[in-house]
Length: 322
Image 1 (cartoon, helix red, strand yellow):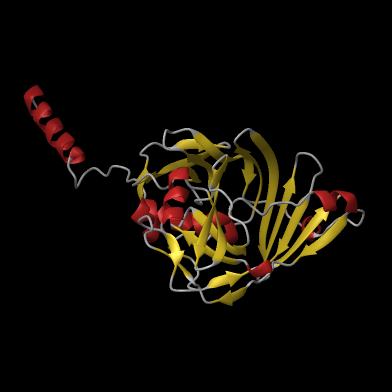
Image 2 (image 1 turned 180 degrees about the vertical axis):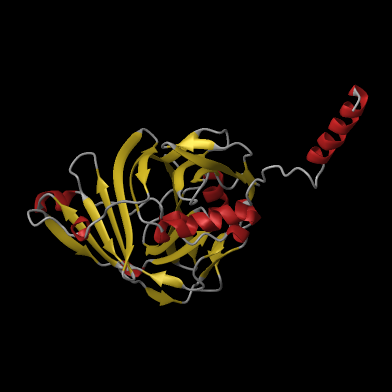
């Protein structure tokens, strides 16, 4: 074959390889599907890892162990800084473990920071966020990871960035960002293994420690007497009814699938000035409402921008005459 013939043959082969039918480019995973798989990974996978949780100027390192065995879910969360407090969960039973009783009286261990990601509704999230998957693979804790951004569609919520394990969709890193891109909150694994050699004793309190079983209170359901005249797109009430707490306080809960806002209403005798408190990503606001002759103190707390709490305060009102 002549040189020109070889050239023509080479061009034909090249055109086939580069055509849609002859060449398959790597595809970027669907964002909603990634989030759904991530939500399931916390309860389905066995893992043992160390992560850092940083918020504002505070930083805390923790170890989490998780196992599914004989139809039961086991989880251990240990604070690696300070007094090595541990929370053990076996299905719905929660046990707090302290070095001694005096420390138990002063410190309460928080629950796993992954709770917000369990049971995510990806379709609902799209009402308030644009979901964007990067076409570049990241690397967290020595593992390849997909990088997914939740970009807010308005000013009423924060942005989120997550890095999910490429092989099993486990959350390796989560950043919460303010409207200017500033970091508010970060959870990042420094090491994690998915074939841990966990034993039964990993989920049994040490005999020399002080253990206390925690029973979550179940507030009584009551008819909601309050409403919002407006809500940001994607936000809705988590419960159709309100919850009755102590001292006549009622509670409502709002969520957009990622951010939550707790609303507390209690009768008071004196007017309190409207005030706001910012701690890291969390904003709390207080306002007194007068309905007929009764005063009510409304408190809202959530991981949302201050403007969200301010706006919700202005549109919160009784459904009818109380």
